[in-house]
Length: 392
Ligand code: GCO
Ligand code: MN
Ligand code: MN
Image (cartoon, rainbow, N blue to C red; front, side, top):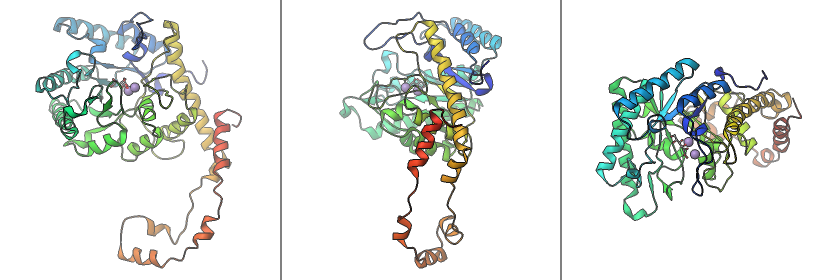
């Protein structure tokens, strides 16, 4: 066993839809056979994962009878018990079925909105039965191409109605679940409502039960929007709103690639891990490290497990590199917080008349302050050298 081989305590999770992805894309047919959920659980456990997440339809095919559902769920529970695998997160598929072609919660048709609520309540029940404590909402089809079809304010208000209702449902059932909202700027719709984590954070603050709702940011999605993923995650963490995370890899300016974690933008990935693991200081993220990615379409089944192990190993390797970076004395000296006993107290704790007077009275030599070189070239080079493994 190698130090970077994953173990259950690392809290790595995969969606059934990720390692179960048969490689279908808009231009081509599947390239791999579909694996049963039970087999995926066994294989993930062998790879060292902690758990598995699912959409309702990943486990119980859409349209199954009640008895089929119970048989499938019982067999899946046995696979979980046999392997010790957990289901920390569950979600609803509100995008595959034709009824959701123009959205689910935001649809103009009340029947579609009711169907979406019905399907989500049942999927929440399934998640609760499997022990999930996080419930993700990704509005796959909540968007438009023909924007004149509805007032976007109405779409947002409908999504609020749905979430207010479902929070109430979870509370009444006593499930103790928390919701995590996942943003994406586009794909499969031309434009999706609430396109980034920042939009979600504001939307959450308008919900009746905002304390039980946080975010599930995804590397690929913020990168598609051209944003810094680490800044988005940090904004959520700063308010204890990072309830879940979707890790993967993505090139900027592309479709949603969902590549193996760390296969692109390794610098972004190490900065993210410094934040999540707290190697840079501050509170650590304690939730599951979930990979929402899939193997290249070139792969057979063996390649899928290479992919899964790769995601987890890269995470652990980058974690080790992040620790080394943050305990490097030269790095620590470069990023030591500057202190000023006279000024610091004036900058915290909000407004007071005295502070305003004191601030106005300070004499600061702007030209002198501006002269100082900040040595960020050296700092960033150190980060690159740690990343490349030439400094330990
Ligand atoms: C995507 C999304 C999905 C969601 C998943 C769980 O772009 O396809 O990232 O993979 O994360 O549906 O909500
Ligand atoms: Mn995702
Ligand atoms: Mn995605």
